[in-house]
Length: 113
Length: 111
Image (cartoon, chains in turn brown, red):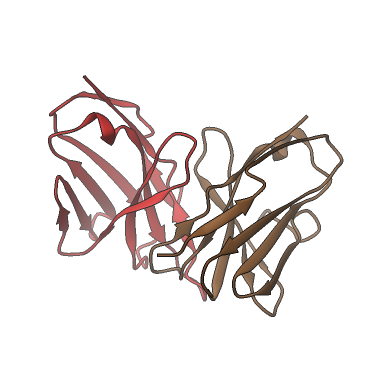
């Protein structure tokens, strides 16, 4: 299994601002994923962070709103841009191949006021 | 139809009871199935994979029914520590084999 850390663990932000969330893995991994879990909802995949190429976004998520970086095989960032209260959620990164189990970071709890 | 459907519950059961959850999936080409556990305000963690032949891990039994496109999780002799949300997870079809999570079934084991 992989050990994953995320920063920050939580934040309260004003609307219109941006927040960058960091995800660090203790080993090199090919695929990293970013999820959102809104209150009372399940996890929704935002995008797959690919090392050396652009992220692959799921339907309903766009790069301008959620830019992602993947500079190496152990690190990724997700930025939530021009935030609104609807962006209040838990954001989780995970690692693993699609058909194997995934390991999740502890999550970043974001509140937008 | 949702890709993965679960009864959100909550299921309130007494200690020692047996409880079962079902989860249906829409994509007949799905290849891999999992149950995850998520404690309140924590990240999801893998509980067990689900194999065609069914599999058991202690008090937990998972089964897959491909014909009817559902998976199940059976918990015997429920403990207070089993209280959590149980997420059904199914892989989709695609170049990177996207994984889809159900909304989760909340279990509350009562003393």
